[in-house]
Length: 296
Image (cartoon, rainbow, N blue to C red; front, side, top):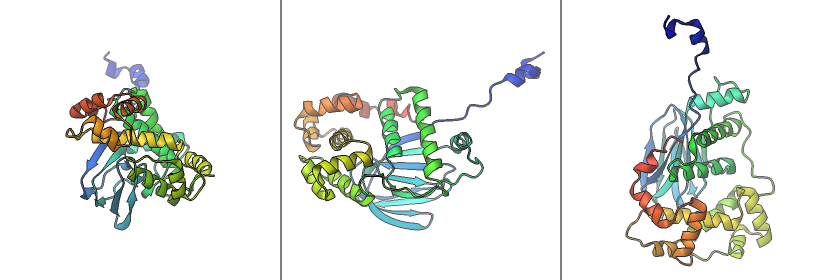
């Protein structure tokens, strides 16, 4: 009797494996118009580059604002979208399969046949932001985290979208005891626009309109990260973007991102990204290595 006609074999065969990962890539865009045709899956875009002025047309709804690092756009499935920017920039694009959302909905005791992800523009969600940076780090490392790590990130992202970003969820509120959304954007915009400068806590606190001690507490509650660590990461991430420009030396990039010297940049890049600037530049020159990890 063949295996296909054996009732016991048919009964014990494994069910099809559900894709628990999201497909992700880093998108460097030029100033001008970018369009996305309707897709059969939800898209989460996280801004990771310098600040840009953007006008967004999504499903016929026009919005305008300043996009800073960590800002999120959520585009529901089957929704056309267009962005017009005045500057070039960089985003992390995460595509969330419907089958992943349905699977996680069942685990959350939600109706998998009634999923409606909400349309969000320039949202701040520290939970998704941390997931996004973890996905980017895995992309940068060529997928060193492994499949289990990528599946855990995919499941966490899907759960957050279902719980806080569906059409029936309660509106997002500012973190308790943290900076208001508009003050946080002011602070992050100031940091992003002055990464090459010697930023001080007193200067940033003045932007927020609070004392230095209060700033440290509020900023950490809003972002989950101390101010100085946030600035270091943003400097390292900006330096990594600049490494794509081979006309710039590593020493020039270090000064352009607020580091005292080249070894200062190398020490922090190794600590945060796990690579030296020279190694990161080599990796950027061979993008096919990173593309192998695009199924995050």
